[in-house]
Image (cartoon, rainbow, N blue to C red; front, side, top):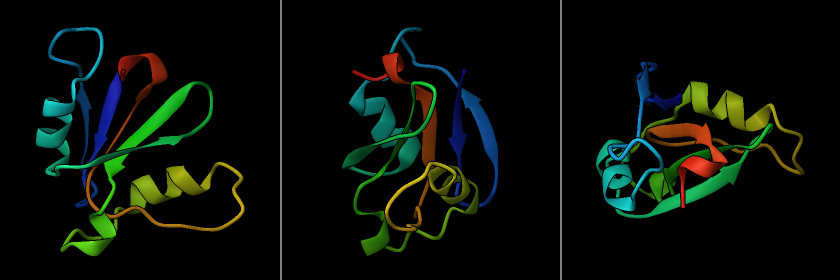
Length: 92
């Protein structure tokens, strides 16, 4: 089950419309964006975010930022706008 982490703190379970994998068009709609970035997490999970969220009026997404920073990385970073966390096979 994939989860949509909204920037207001709401977390919603979501599924691909075709039942298998998300298409870009539906990601654009759910993330309210036009450019998607894929971020690798742990255990074959990925986070899909608005690549230019920091350059828009998108706000800090605390839940998504905490998930992102739970994976050891060279630098701390933050996520702006909505984010979807799903299994890697759910996005092609």
